[in-house]
Image 1 (cartoon, rainbow, N blue to C red):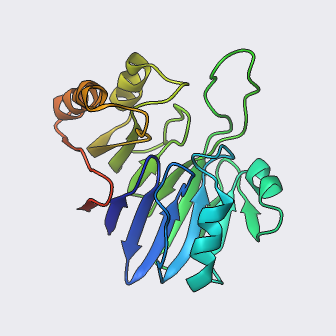
Image 2: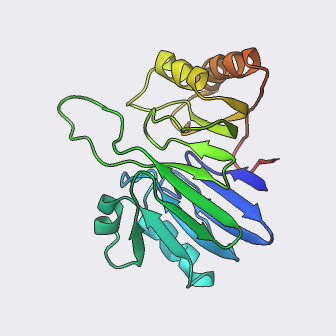
Amino acid sequence: MKITKQGHACLIFEDAGKKLILDPGAYTEPLDSLCDVVAVVITHAHDDHCFEAQLDRLLVNNPDLQIYGTPQVKTRLAKYNVTAVYHGDYYPVGPFTVEFFGDLHAEIHRSIPIIENRGVLVNDKVYYPGDSFTLPDRPVELLAVPTSAPWLKVGEIMDFVQAVHHKKSIATHNALLSEFGHNLNNGRVKAITESKGGQFTYLLSGESIEI
């Protein structure tokens, strides 16, 4: 399976000639001309993960793609056909499987309402928590680690990476960082992954890793 990092929090999974898109949000470059997309997974309803213009682009060449998201995502995207997902849900779609974990977005500030969020495990191999520190219930091959957000600090991410048994890690959710910020935060993730015998890879937008 090939995983391509796109702008900010978007990942494109490819297997057996099909694609699954995770969190194609407003901070991701326009996803034009993609074909063979069987599904889109949206972890929560914030614009940097859930953006109607991206879905419209994807639907041009993939009118039958399936969309999975929280009930709040389903409400926001009422004009689309969205399957609401909950903790423990499991769906096969094309050559992919998606399993969902958790309930809520991490707190940004006590004055800001906490919305729904689902972590997702793809093909029982790649785990991404969305905007949360929700842990998977098993070891994973690849951990996609949010490295910058209003809702996190580096120490919390370090604890999250330490808690998840994984062989490889990549950085994501990082559009807000400068080069200095990438170097600092990636270095923390890399150190913990390597201390567990794993390998960290920093992907620029458009770069890929295969597992």
